[in-house]
Image (cartoon, rainbow, N blue to C red; front, side, top):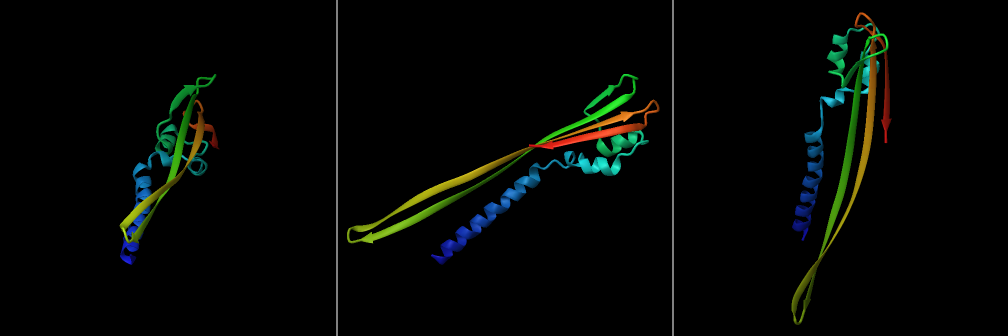
Length: 141
């Protein structure tokens, strides 16, 4: 019986470790560079468009303002979903004069949590192609 419990415990431990492996496999390392912290730390007025692109990558939208100066917009939307489940199996046995019998009862429980995040970065350039202003907005729901 002790051996069975040890084997079941080992199986549960291995199953728990696979969830972190799945997270590492689906993580987007390129998209993780576009954060509010990166904008606050790296983007400065007077930078060139090349420097901005080197830090943040290519913008999602490039347009012009009323004075025909470039405006770059970065728009990132991400969704994180976490799922947890557990299973229980109860085994039972009975020995009587008419023979042996047994049964099993299983139960499952689970929960899911989904979080959506948005980050919008607007970078405005002057007539010489240098950053004249920038703003950002983030939300989480």
